[in-house]
Image (cartoon, rainbow, N blue to C red; front, side):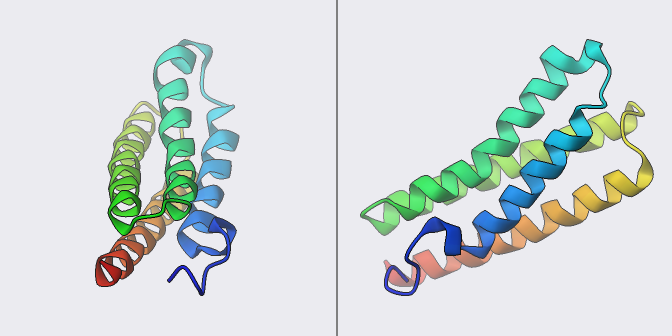
Length: 123
């Protein structure tokens, strides 16, 4: 895997996670001020953690370290999904925005699982 991938930029999981992060930052700008210090900050922090973990993991020397960071990225993705459902329930997202974000979350989850499977094969 390390020979085929020269940079974390080459990883589809990182690319899609960056797309998710961008969308989250854009829609969260419209959240009410009272959500700023709770949901907005937490959502943004968890969202940026996903591509950051992929990037950090790709640079690790051992597959075990990479596996751990990808697992942590999946944990953060689950938190993001919960938070998106929460903000939707609170009426902070329009239905099309919610649907698009949930689709991105599913795509990132699938790519993280594929990456994890690849890492496990190299161990």
